[in-house]
Length: 428
Image 1 (cartoon, helix red, strand yellow):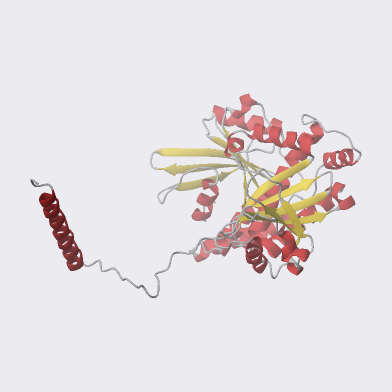
Image 2 (image 1 turned 180 degrees about the vertical axis):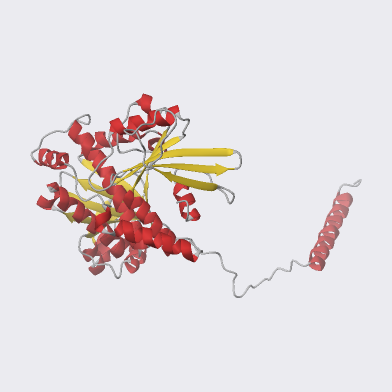
């Protein structure tokens, strides 16, 4: 972060830390602080960001392999930050969080007030380094070599960096309870743990897509949830308890629409979908459907369905892509014209749904498959710009002379009209 400056500043910008051309980043390891520092409480690093007269500092604590961060250790470091006037604590581990401000370890409100708390997964750091290098953001040759060596190191199995490879034991318990017809409580520890694991898996999935596409793919989080992680967990836990479903939305640069990913515990299935508006310049449902089918001409139709949304509050209809290719007329509704389409990919996992590792493996295969078969082909409809007519019966001259001549004619006509009125209104 210190040597490859642009890379370090790019990582810090993800925390909302502003940097400029004159900003300097210093990095230290195995730091001992003046107040409250001893051998038992020694952070792995310290970042110091200087920009003119302002200074921002952060302690760094990192874990590798299967070693997780603990609440007790984090609370000690937050207290250490408070005593020494340090602004933040940054943690790095194989644990995932949907946003850097949403920490995977729950802490007390009092501890969170001592300093800002941020978190990166090692896979996030590796992904950002890969994108930074592939996109040509590092101009200096020596810095490219250094960044490439870091990528090689973090990619080696011995480094202990890994993705999210399995759901917790609570996943199997919740899946089996739903399958047996039981009810879920939003406040139960199993439901809360499953929701937290879902956040970690979707974050890892966004990083996988980022590396595959060479573009940064993000998980879209509502503004209210960004500000209040507890509210997000509460609402998603309630959805899981009531609907037996979990969902996340992914934003991919320059695609026709966001990708919605959902898992259904009742059906033991995974879904991915994108919704686009139907072309407004085509008058019939068949014509609008033809526009969509042309985009999906190279897609494998297995497991792909198209939902039709109609004007008003009527229910949507749905047909398999295989059927629509053979008989597009089947989608037509009397007196209605489709307003938008949703292309849906469904994969039934059956017994593998409740298996902690197999679920993650199947999900991480299904979503890139959907993008390859559907997402990268879809284009949003856009009205065409108006065109000048090739032949105009009455071309309009807007030159200065023409405008002046037209004004003289209008004045002459007004004078003539005024004279006629004067003659009609004279004495009889």
